[in-house]
Length: 502
Ligand SMILES: [Zn+2]
Image (cartoon, rainbow, N blue to C red):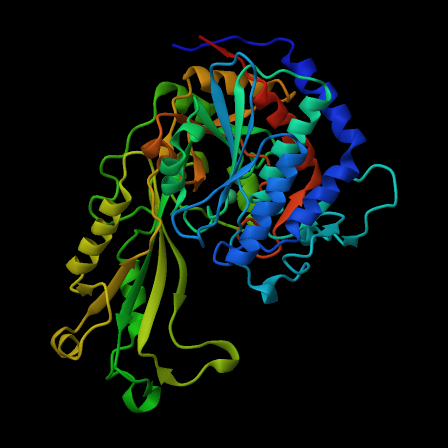
């Protein structure tokens, strides 16, 4: 049984000296960070992924964290970078996690600046922020934003954690637990080898808790701890028309149009309020406990402000709050493709229509079962469902054919009890770095492969994000507000100093 000792001196230890250290070393931190951001980091690009891993290995080497690359079975698997700060006499450990890979980029869409050319702006581009050069000396305005892929998601996590190590080592701070570090290289590609890397390095990666630095703080700007994440599963759905494109005048209203077939099918999956109408979608969802429900009630009300900012006259869920809705499973259409629009538009009946569906899961859902529910639903709408291209015979036999392929890398949701001793310790630590009450969320809306961790190790996971919520995470023009990095360093220095006793 672990007991937690509240540390009244934590505020002094974690805040002032850490802030002083940061103020004295801003340029050094920013220089290292922008060099890291300059290395392209898409998981499907092994040579550059390895450059990132090597760069982070050197960052950890400089800090005396005895780094090593944890490889997968195949040489092209993005390595995880592991390091350790061993504390003499400590019998417990925590692992601090961030990921160094980023979502794919479409350079044409990056109107702020190219994705791997870190660029400063005086504010968010949408608010009129203009390109800035770092001043030759003196402090940097902390409202400035750094634009680059992974500036927030999630190289900010790598940088905040390693800068916090510097700040603690500079003041000879003595953590009470062994600190382990793991920086993963394919989180955005679904962490398909994380389980394998854990199995190959079980002893190294064992810890009382995995504490995850990823995602945004609360929309209000308050610091946030998330005790869970949604699970995620993507599936591609393709429906078919004639075998070759047809003239829309000669054959329109005779040959079925797959785009129409697809949107009709998709429309059967949700009602007007956004509630899923697929049978079994909400089965097994584990209800929230009392502490979790209270935490949602305590979170700042922000939905009206968000609707105004986003230009939304209405949101889904019949008036339910965003915080409540992210504790329910959902289905999002990530994209639809059929024929062409814009300059390439032609008068044709396309041959196929495809949608990419994003199934978000909560505790109690299983990602394989949810795909099965989707398939059953499509069958019930009269479709012949396959997982490959239809044969000639099938095309002649079935009026409605749907190819459904569940993408690799799906995983389940994860949630840690808020009254777990380590949860309480992390709450104290993060609160000690903030004057405002921190926000505690039973789950983040987004997904991280945390169930992979708890499937392979006996541990718990807690997420402590640092990025600004309007960071364009996963999209073009991703950015980090500088103050979020500075706050993140203080947050993570406090997390490293949590005290848990036998
Ligand atoms: Zn991330």
